[in-house]
Length: 239
Image (cartoon, rainbow, N blue to C red; front, side, top):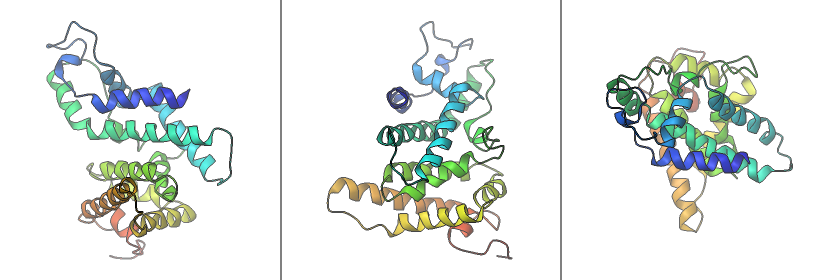
């Protein structure tokens, strides 16, 4: 059920283009019902139950996939988590345009921003580990390459936000074992060999390009930064 519902939400998000006419109560408000994508975007940029469920699914997926054991509904869970990651990535990709149109519409809806909420405290663990769970998707690259790609893409979007470097670095390196697993996951993403069929080759190339783009945009930030961590520097020392 979760897989099918998220698939539909993902479809709405992929085709949604923010417009001032969508926002209820705005100066340019459309008399017709707003598109489904608007409702999902609002839910993703506020402390909503929908966002909580999305992040809870990511959290639960990490717990179950880290067991590396078969369980009932594993294929459905893997598919559901891909749709969930797609929705998060689309929310971040369209966030700036969405907020611009929200401001221009004079809508009274109050929104925090998905990029900030992903750095908020996880009520399940009591820690700010949503981005840790999302980034851990790169450690499953051997059998979940699409999920791995989306994990790297979301991390890239967050790195581009202002004044998040120190907080993000602290989240990713808080646990020694997880820190090493994540770094190894990114190494594996770059080391993967191409397969013969075109689809797999295209996907692996996309992962490599995303990782390189992430490193490129993180490296100029104040040291130590996420790029230094992923490149293997000892971030406890002066870089």
